[in-house]
Length: 319
Image 1 (cartoon, one colour):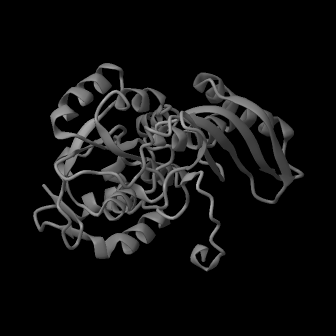
Image 2 (image 1 turned 90 degrees about the vertical axis):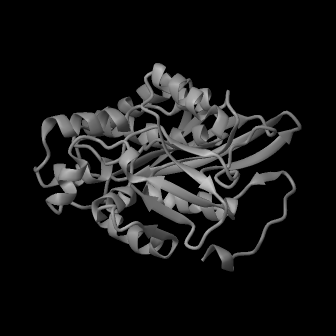
């Protein structure tokens, strides 16, 4: 649909929507650019305060994924007219708590009456235009690092069916309310060539964007994937979100999975994440040191693969 729209020409647009990147970047001066994003969704948690926290964490993540610093945010609210207004107060409070943690000031917003509850933010950040990390800059020889465990979509689905263990849900909620601020700041200290956050299109959906945008191939190691407790059990029990199947169908032409790798791992890599981690393409010589610093800072980073010359299909899943 976007391809049918008129093309705007503005030399100050450094990153637009042509490569499905995490956020747009607009040049102000040779040393300063704006990075802008917007994200909102229906409730992902039963507790309204936690829902607000997750929505804020998710919206902020796109700025961190570009290497930017969030500065201001505008709130977006859709709320049922007959719903308890106290719920909305808790949602707003939860979101604000994460904005305060990020040092991002909420300066306004917009609300409407809607039959379905939705909440999120439009976030504006700043970035050095000479150090923008897009999803299309990976170099052959780079190592791929993932900073959060996979499985939030699966566990949220299990929770809806009341088939989720308390410890699974606790770990998932902790992941979804952890900002990518520290991870992004540490990655910027290294020779990182490309970065994106893993959200609704799952690891394989976002890896596909990086591979195609960078014109490279990828090898992903199933055995190295960080996995939230309970995620594989959800797949075994058939507690799978609809978005997982859609992503798997979409990326199928770009994936080759070794026969030795169980199908469940491919499904996990298609699981739609909310407020997921960063997928980072970093120079091979710095990957080990970067992962060590991330882990020392409490970020659960793991090296999960490497960038290779373009292949067909571009993504190869091995043990």
